Length: 324
Image 1 (tube, rainbow, N blue to C red):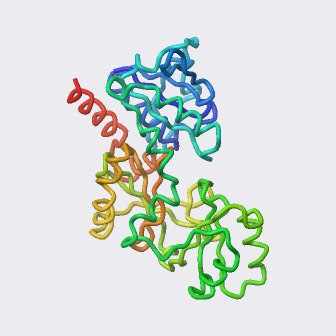
Image 2: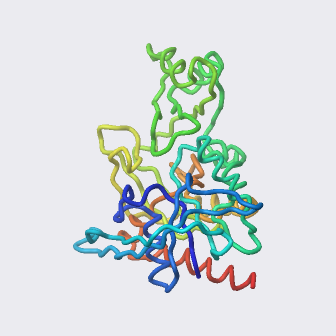
């Protein structure tokens, strides 16, 4: 197979952490061609999506004394070539958020890939329709009490009723801009005004879950099925558990309640073409559904001695065989 990965500039990726690199390595190890491009290098010509692509050859990371070790350099790129994306067997959209105009325009361009010919993971329309905070709201049985609003008084009433809450910007990633908001906070007005851009942009406010002190679980789903999980723990100086904010990771099982959550999401994820997804769960409650460039494979593989990237690529192999 020929696989294209739409990523951030490759020199900015961390081969010991980034899931995109783990997927590309798995594809190479399984005998496939790996090509890379960036969202700003996509085009439409004669009704088809094209990209400036480079073939990449990777030096796989090695697990040494419980740590991933990368070679230097860890990749080599070919010359650039303008190529129709329909010459690829599959295209992985793995650009990191925020989902800004540039990101959205890239998904519009990917609409011009014939998915009967080339598999796009995740579906461009699915990504557009699945804000990573808002998407969870349709699964009301398994989420904490939540509101979304730009109205300060509406937010105030919710916070006063719940006592302790978490405020989340709708478009950020990796814990950016998440705030702990309590009833009676003297900074309440300023926090809400800054977060909502003076009442112009809605934010999500959720009941604070005390179980967050025990960790924030990331579960990786492949075509709706859970294939691995890790627990993210705060550094102690920050209430957020995100790896990007200094949190640590620990091995964890997937509980029966979490299996139930995954089962509730499965049909909707498949319907929306959201094949590779990372959900966040705290205390048995779904808090986010990550569809843009979910991460966690490197950490899960290290903790559980798994090869999740291989599972993903093998799923692509089987899916394309069934199509043909």
